[in-house]
Length: 147
Image (spheres, rainbow, N blue to C red):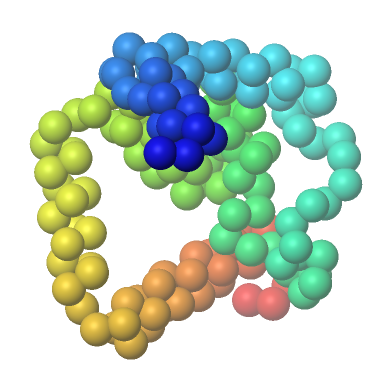
């Protein structure tokens, strides 16, 4: 076995292998994001780094996500919701992964199995449709004047 591959697997197993280590990693990430958010005014200072927004001038479904995560970490849930409601789903998924909640894992595995059983055309159509809906919501959320 390649030594680099063994070291990568070993690190992954040690760091992400147990529920306790995942929760500790999540707490550390929360603390770091919280501190960064407090020190940068909620990530409001700085350039726009979204490639979709830089290319098109319009916000993507993820725009506002970093600021929303920062707002969640400092307890500003209403502000986070107004910035990007999708981040609450993302936080829920990360928490479910870290805690390894069995019913949620079974539900996610079942949904993934159903999704993968569909034709590639259906998968692409579904993902493209969801992205389009989320993009329309983002444009409306940021009042960019299109809708």
